[in-house]
Image 1: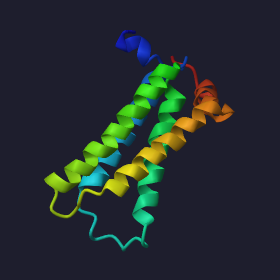
Image 2: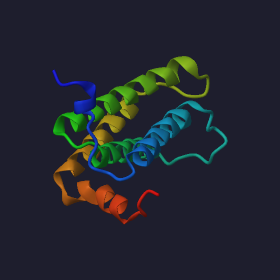
Image 3: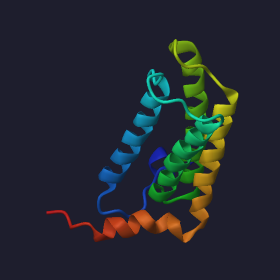
Length: 139
């Protein structure tokens, strides 16, 4: 079994902490937005929340594909995001009074992760490296 540092080896970024930090902030934002009371917002059309779940987890997964250098790291990150989506659904049902657990939301999360994972197979998977290369060098 490979050490954790090898599994989660990052692509050769000049600013790795920035990109990992932004990914972690995005994960935390999804968790918080999944658990807070959003009843004051306008209603979402029927099924619209599934689209929101899909997009959120597709973006998290796409970001992971941008970050991690190895296939194993990408697979593990994707599996962890699927697990996160399931855990958040359970948390909505048990920790909040205004949200409820929904298996279809968890499925939308998982499908979003799968869509994001698929970007690993495209040239788009190197976009963040190109952006990173254009940033000013460290002082």
